[in-house]
Length: 132
Ligand code: FE
Image (cartoon, rainbow, N blue to C red; front, side):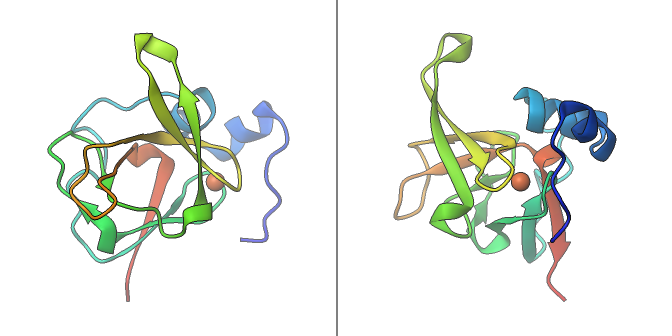
């Protein structure tokens, strides 16, 4: 976790798989129901695939039916940054890793928890470690 973060896009390309690079660095979106964590129900922690920061706990994961891993909350309020995103003809709130600014997904106001939020996150931006 003390690894120095890449500074250039060339370094990011070297560090990440093409799919991780597309999502994290190019704000890509994996196709629904194709991500490796969409239906993962194991207890554990989801870390940023870019920098290793802890982002989401399995405790807050739920099945939204959307086709992407969905959470009611990040592991800590300052683990993620939220930015207004007006691309693709929609007004959405983008979610980024607060440490490396990698694109994770979006947050929507239709979640089930007390916050009413749905963090809709690409599997490709995450690295799951099961609880031991
Ligand atoms: Fe990160």
